[in-house]
Amino acid sequence: MNTEALNRYLKNYSKWFAANRSIATQERNEREQLALKVQSFTRERLEQMDEEDLFDCIAPLWAMTMWGNRHYQVDNIIQANGMSLLRDQFSNLIYGSESVEKRWDTFRSKVKGIGPAIMSELLCKAWPDQYLLWNRRTYDAFRLLRVPKLPRYEAKLTGKTYEYLSGQGREMVVFAKQNGCSEITNMLTLNSFFWQELKNKNNPEPIETDEDLSPKGKKEALFVHNDIRDKLADIGRFLGFRAEVEKKVASGAVVDAIWEVTIGNMGRVIYVFEVQTSGSIDSLILNLIRAKNNKAVQGIVAVSDQRQIEKIKKEIAEMREIKDDIKFWDYSDVLRTYDSLQAVNESINNLGLVPNGL
View (cartoon, rainbow, N blue to C red):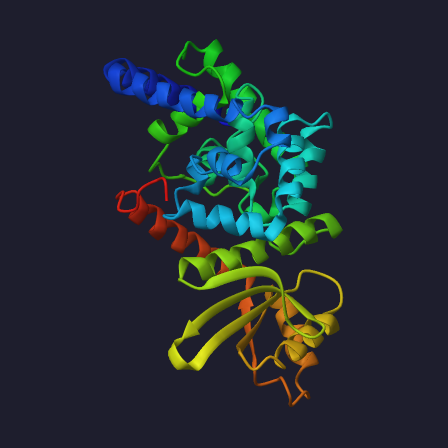
């Protein structure tokens, strides 16, 4: 970590805070109220929460600002997981007795449609002295401050990595206090500092980053698979499709994600996506062949890294029934598309054209 740069930015932040005390204090109070909202969801309340409680818990989160209709997205999360699983996993993530590393990994392996941005925001607001709020802004700030071993992609953010990043955040808070920046007291106020002082700053030099999406080990393969699967569904929703994950579309064919739309007299049109991170390519091909038996399926897409895409192409080269039908989408392209659509949606939703309660 570049402590010299951090100290310089902290001094600038303290000057800004003193010159804009009214606005800065108001922003801090708003953040504290949002944190208290999360803290009002005790373990007992989470274990008994219903659908409206879940909406009240996650709809106000900053990670949800990309969704204009937040009820729609929360309904998708409930449909994909069921309330019983969500009650168990939310209460365990925030209040479980195991290490945050294990709680994080358990949540990520079991819950569909909720990623590190929401998870870390809940943990940060519930326990602001311990846990870091991780999103693109935090990544950019850490990169600017030369923090090593950063996960560029959420798909690579395991519990072990999240605990490491939270540790780096705790060190920054201690450093701020030791160097006279009283405005930073925990990791919620550290996030305020990132947003105010470190936005739109350029990195003068390259830094070691984890850019490779090829998974290393079974656990990482599962996280990459689930992250890409969930983002495929979100891209479909951004584009106006009805999107689902792990959907049965034909006999013997449960696919990772679908986009579906009804077009006038044509009826249903379905696009099918299968994500390949590890394991047998044959099972992916078989699943896509079976999916084609549904006449509503108009497109089938294999999603993987470039190395595995080439393997799939070789495998299907002699399969007349499918070789000309499969489209290919690289992981990295999926994530770039997601990031771009997320930015567009957040910008539009910040106009306030759709009331927050919808």
